[in-house]
Amino acid sequence: MTNSTNMTDLLGTWELLAWRSYRDGEFYKFPMGEDGKGQLIYTKEGIMSGFLMRADFGSEVPGSDTKASKCLSYAGKFRIEGDEVIHDVSLATIPEWMGTPLIRTMEWRGEQLLLKTTPQSGRDGAKYSNELLWSRRETVL
Picture 1 (cartoon, rainbow, N blue to C red):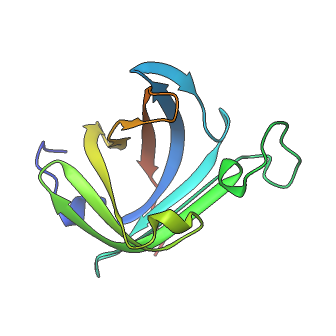
Picture 2 (picture 1 turned 180 degrees about the vertical axis):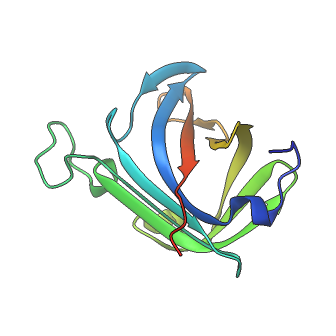
């Protein structure tokens, strides 16, 4: 993959390999567990959808009282600007995301795609960010 990503580079279905959360630049946790599951789809029409969940979604998760800590999904349009993919969210399990752009910095690791969130301040004053590593799923015709 080249350093310059275009829309065609993202088209297809992607499978989550790892989702890591960072606090002040240091590894903090696996938001959906070390074995979290996820799927990301980009279409040629400029539509995207993402779904992330814990592998044990149907089970009780100690210390988790919100649905977003067990699974989340969102969908909308997408566009590319430089090294960023912008997800313009129209549907989401997190209501605050609807009508907002989710900006992800893209970094290619061979054929794998690493999407990084912009660090955001938490209630505790720390900066939190996420890195999600994706692998393209084979297309079956």
